[in-house]
Image (cartoon, rainbow, N blue to C red; front, side):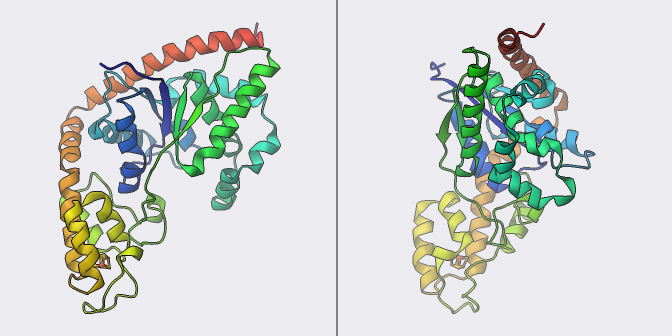
Length: 329
Ligand code: SF4
């Protein structure tokens, strides 16, 4: 095994079946990072509680996310994969970090304002403290690096400030300021072609779906709105199907579509059929592995338990230092 250049931490929400946006935006990157970093990946069930009121599916969704990650290529023999609530030290650190966090800073964060707008009936304390819990997650495992998209950058900057406040307040050099690793993730729009792909907007294409269900979703995709008739020339530059072709489809076919669409040489129906076929082909190994894993639930739970034990060992070591710095009796 090649030596690793640092420790990466990232948390992923248990949203149930992952969609293409999750896969291209986060999961593929998680898999790739394993080659260079010691990776600590956490399924953040506690974070989910800030927005999920009905927790009936929480356990199943957490399990489904574990299946998706493992099927996509997370290697549990080297990567630590676990469920957030299985490491209770994170809630202790969250409480301690809360004491060095000004409330105004939390309520000023754009992500809090957005969430408050989205669920005005449920602006709970957890929603305000979400970035503190996220900071606790990151620093508990002494992570050097956190992969982030642009929208998450303020949270990492916030984590760095919390670390500085903690180390200053308690005159300690215990917690590490994590570095951001900007990830080049494509913005994947949903089948509506307007909004980011999201389960809550029901515009998703699930990666674990059957080939036929995938084909049906692809055929519903909105294309160039100006292209009304088959004989109208299209503009691939503003078409979401083409954006996804560029990620999934072999370069030769992408070049062909780019030319033929503009002169109405290919229709949207054929173009989408081609995309659905390529997408199903690309997802074939993932789906096969997922099927194998789903037949062995005891194995998947054992992987998560083993991951939690390894995560707890690191977490407890950090907490011994934190408690000492804070001088907890
Ligand atoms: S032919 Fe393809 S790229 Fe062109 S508008 Fe239709 S779906 Fe989009």
